Each structure stands twice: as C-alpha cells, then as structure tokens.
Image 1 (tube, rainbow, N blue to C red):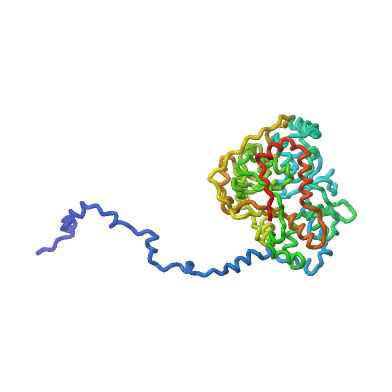
Image 2 (cartoon, rainbow, N blue to C red):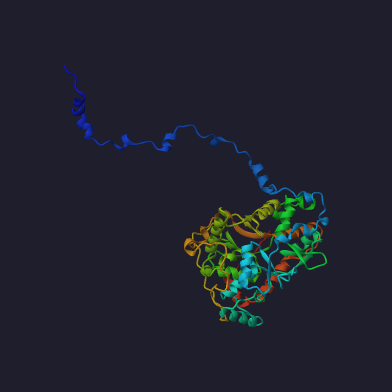
Length: 488
C-alpha cells in the first residue's frame, strides 16, 4: 500500500476536524494567567516579615530628640555666649539695598528677585547707613491700597488721596510715599560687638530682625533675624547648657505659645485674609475649616504671587484656592510636593518644634489637637459691605509685572476647605508657637527681662488699626475672624 504523500496529508481533513473547526473556544480554555495569578502561590516577600529597625519607643525618642541638621560650628565651641558678638552671625553679603526715591515696582522686583525677606532703605546709593526697611508686610499693605481695599481714617485721608491720584494718573509712586501708608516693623540696630544675650533679649520682646552696624558708626554690616539666631542656638546647643536643658521638655510643660489664636475660614475671600493680617499685624494666618481643623497657612511672603495684573481674580477667590496655588508653585520651583500645614501638638518637645522650624524655615508652628470630624462642604462667605471712600485704580497695573512663575486660574480650580488633607491630618487649631515665644523663653531662662511679646503684638495692631484699615476691618472682623482663647 502506497503511503500518502505530503500533498494528500495537507488536503485530507483528519477525523473530527469539522467539529473542531466549527467550535469556538470557550473563554475559560483561552484564558491567560495574569501577572498576579502567576505570582499566586509563590513565597511571600521577606519584607512582609521583616522586623522594624526601630521600636515604637525608639521612634518616639527620635521624634522628641531629633538630630541636628548640621554639625556645630567649631568657631564657637567652648565659648561663653557673652563673648560671641552678633556680627559673627551675619555677613554684609546678606544685605540688599534700595533707595527711598525708587519706584515701588522696582523695589518690589528687587525684593522678589533677590530672594531676600527684607530690603534696607537708604537715601543715596553710596550710603551705607539704613533708615528704614521694605519687606513683604509693606508689599501686602501696598497691594491692598492698589486694589482699593484700604479705607483711611480722617487723619490719613490726605495721604491716601494724594497717592490715589498719582496711581490713577499712572505716575511712579516712590517707595518713600508707599512707606507713608504705615510703619509695621520697628527699626532696631545693634553694634556688631553686642553679645548674643543682648540679641536674645531684644528678639524675645517681639522684634523680628535687627540691623547690625559697625561699632561707633551707622554703617551696616549685616542683618540678624530671629530664625538665624534660633538656628544657630539649635545647632550649637551643647555649648549653651542652660538652653540645652530645655529642649527635652514639652511645649505644654514649658507654657510657651500665644494664648490667642487668629484664623480665617478657608472659604472666605483671599482679600479678607490679607486685610486681617494687615490689621492685626500678623506675618501669617492659619486657614481652618468649619470644625477649626487647620487646612493651610497664608503668609505675607505669599503675596509675591499676586503682583501680576493677571492675578487680580485671586483676591476674590477663596483662601483654599490660593493655598492650592502656593503649593503648586512650590512644587514647580522646588521640584517636590509641599504639605499645606506645619504643625506640632501640645506634647511635642521643644527640640521637635525647633527642629521643624529650622527645617521648614517657618516663623511659627500651629499647635493642633486631634482632628474634629469635617463636613463634606463649607458654606460660601457672606458678602461684606464696605463704606464709600476714594479708591486708587482697582487693578494691579501699578504693581511689578515680573515675579516667580505661578499657575493660571484655569489650572487651579477652587475647592472646599474640607477637601485638603490638613483637615484630616493636622488637627484642630489649639494655639501657635512662634520664634518670638522661643526666644522669649531663652531670654527668661538666662535671667534676662525681655519686653512682653504680647504687648508688642498689641502695639502692632494699634499701629495698623489707627492707620488705613479701621473702617474696612470693623465689618470684616465679624465674619472673617476666628479668635479663641487657648486654655493650657
């Protein structure tokens, strides 16, 4: 019998082939295993059974006593702080100058582009003596003036009217005139040979910065800020035993922090927050939801995002919306996410609190308790009526047009205060600990007698409220201000 050829094998169907060809494979038969199913049954990862490298007690000890971010400076090792001059902590390279006759726009551009927190103001370029400062608190006040949010009392009406006419005519407003809107920060100088104890006593009374001058002259050699001094004392704390003994104690036991907290609901308009900060003499403001959970923070430095004419709609949008702009801008500039709230609790140690302040370069930490249940939505702010007074142009064309990049309105939609993670993570606002509070504690522990910082705060409020904002803020306080007496 002749064997079938290969041609015959290809053309002759095999038995049962018609059944198989007419049959559609079932999904079960054609199923391919997923990646997860392929791994099913394999031994678990060793990470699942790995023991933590730190026990709970060790972790808590690390939080209570965080390591210093930098090694102690050997120049100061073993030295008594009465022998350390304030001039050793600052440098002329840190000083940024502007002249009284410079336009407010030019001064603001220098402030923003230099990265400095303050400019020293002088009469002439060749001069080395400072007569005033220009900082973000001044910029906040001028921003409120330029957008028609300031309402002068009778004493300041002539100054206000003159500046408003200049702005309407498109004239350059000199820094000298802008400073006449009000003085926010005392101008304090110390000779470079003054010791650290003197600076601690001044800062503990509520002064935020000291201009350092050459001994026997007015020539400026640097600026010493509260943050720089706190950072120095933290990194070199072992050389100052009196202070080092305080770091292990809790802020509750030390009794530090303001007994009065001022906050604003996140769904209030941004312009109300800026007016509140200006009127109360604040450099930053806690933003809370309806249950007083802290959901964010707005500071005077953040107003640099409002100096473009295209940012004018931000003022009528919510504080929460502006916080989202702040965080997004930080992400673009720093290349990393930023959490909206810096906070501690009453049982945080002083070491933990100071380490956070130094690491974040913040000037205050909000003290929070456990979070309160947050509603899914918060109501819209009530409309606030304003008295009729002369206004400068209600746009930002008179402000500088160059500033760090910020997100357009379309990319930062407004959200409710309860939608930010701070409503669930930060907790309920219970107080605030500032650099002033810490330096006041250091001063008292050293046997000094600093001025009561609460009195300094009251002076700032009296200075602000007796200036341009008395009429506009009397109505704003009732709907925007959340003031609580904190019982420790």
